Structures are given as C-alpha cells and as structure tokens.
Length: 156
Image (cartoon, rainbow, N blue to C red; front, side, top):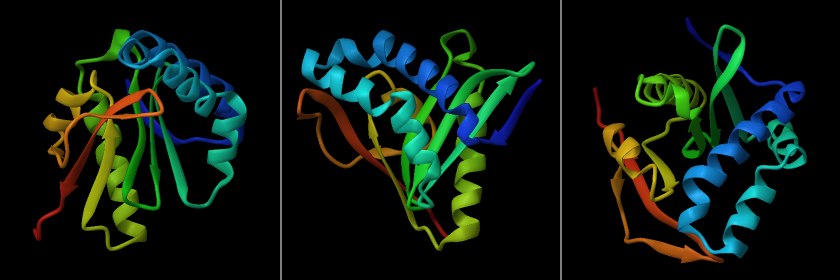
C-alpha cells in the first residue's frame, strides 16, 4: 500500500540516496559533467537537511511497506522543487498522488494560482500528464538542461 507522510530531518539521508540515484540514471545523461555535479551536490544529505529545515520548503514522502519510493518537495507554496519516484515504482500513478497531496497542502497555506517547475528532459511527459505546459524552450544553465513549465489553476 502506498502511503504519504511529511518528511523529517531524520529522512534526509534516505531522500538524498533516492534522488541522487535517480538523477545519475535519468537526468545526468542530459547534463554536462559540471551540471550533473551541481545537481548531485544540491541533493546531498546536508543540502536536503537544509531544505527540510527551511519554512518555505515542504517535503512529502511516498512509501511502500515502509520503503521510501517517492519524494515531492515544494518551495514557497508554488514551485515544484523535487518530484522523484523510484524506477521500479514509475508508471503507477505515485507521482500524481504525491503532487496532488503537495498541491493541496500549498493551497491550504496560500492562494496559489500558478505552480512552476523546471523539468528535466526525462520528466517532461510526467509533468505534461499532470497538466503543466512549457513556458519556454530547453535551457542550459551551468550545464543543467531543463524546460521551464507551469500549471495555471482555474477557478472550480
């Protein structure tokens, strides 16, 4: 059973391990060596611990049988900072479930109208499936290749 819970500081090492593994496999190949190194440093245990302690970040974890299989993080109640699902769990809707929970938490705290994300090239189809649209072409910033995207919320 897939469960979602808030992250705590004690989760930083496990979050870092999952994010770094997936980054090496799916994101780094589209980046320069320098860009991949910057991404991996930003996903180190100490970096993740720092984000978790900041009040403008919100981390949620997806678990299966107490195993960490997915992570979502938002910043400033409007920017999707991380959304990662373990490779053996991809394609099961876990990214959508995590994002829905993260979005609901953001909307409880703020009057968010637009969510943004800097999508890796690998994750573009996932974000498109979640309703995000590209707002610019592919960028290369310090060797990190991404596509800026946004999700505009409509009145219900």
